[in-house]
Length: 108
Image (cartoon, rainbow, N blue to C red; front, side, top):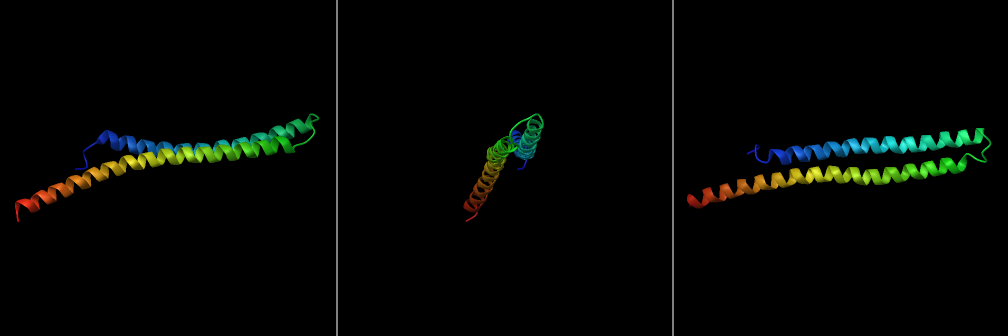
């Protein structure tokens, strides 16, 4: 019974893998945003800029937004992959229950 719906199984697994990959990339992008803003602020300060604070604060805020929305997107991908696998398991259990009930009905 495990051979049914191979494409859906592959698609569900791929969605889960993409969810994990996007989570890792989200964390890296958030860190890069914070680091890049800090480096930009320091560079601006070296060339006569007023303060390090505005660029750093904007970088941290941008990093937080990247992290929040990336996390939502990643969890959505992973959950969609889980739903595909849930639907397949539900179909298998329904088929098994139907077979069992039919066997019980034939042998009262």
